[in-house]
Amino acid sequence: MAFFEANFYSESLGLQTTVNVIMPQRHTDGQIGVEGKAGNAEYKCLYLLHGLSDDHSIWLRRTSIERYADEYGICVVMPFGGKSFYTDMKYGEQFYTYISEELPRLMYEFFGISQKRENNFIAGLSMGGYGALKIGLKNPEKYAACAGLSSVADIRSWTKGCPDLMASVFGANPQVPDSEDLFCIAENADKNALKPRVYMGVGTEDFLYEDNVRLRDKFQTLGFDYTYRESSGTHCWTFWDEYIQYVMNWMFNEK
View (cartoon, rainbow, N blue to C red):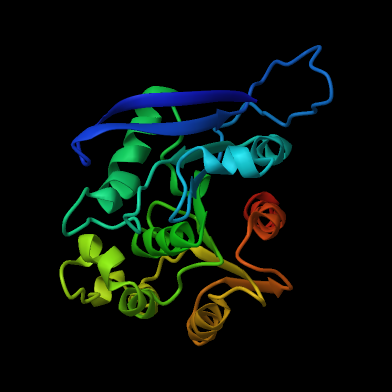
């Protein structure tokens, strides 16, 4: 595998930003301890989103994501999302537009990463789990599957509990529109003939557990190819390092 840190100007954000990219390497003769699966076809790509307190470097620092990606011969793109909840913020940058539209175009421009739906996937944890589910469900023509781990599943409940934090996202006395609420987004996405596969995972001791269960119940009433998994665990990297492996097996092992 090859690792790149790309620094560039984003028109959507109006500023310089950074993205970490892991790419398969086809020729690695003599490399010790690694058996990669890079093929000759277009690579599949996982866009991997971070949580509220973190940045584009955190998945590499807290998990073995490069080693996991090597097992499947896939690309992994890890962008910076600030505290935006991957939304076009009321008082801030346009992170939804950046992640869903501009970033895939730039990854094709810089690295030749495929733009085909069947080759693109998105996942994240906590704030990034909310972002991955939202972006995947609202853009079914771009992503074959989306996954949220320990997601901020009920953004309205979260916003009521953290109004000062969310004021920059949704404005003063923040009100969350239906277009940003995962329950409403799922209902609207269910009306589309084209739907991404959906995965949710959460720990039973996670403070977001109940919200994730309610979102699980919503998905179970809808017509998605939907997978849910829970086990003992809290809102921590021990859980996410384990569960990102389940996500990748679910995404990239052919049915």
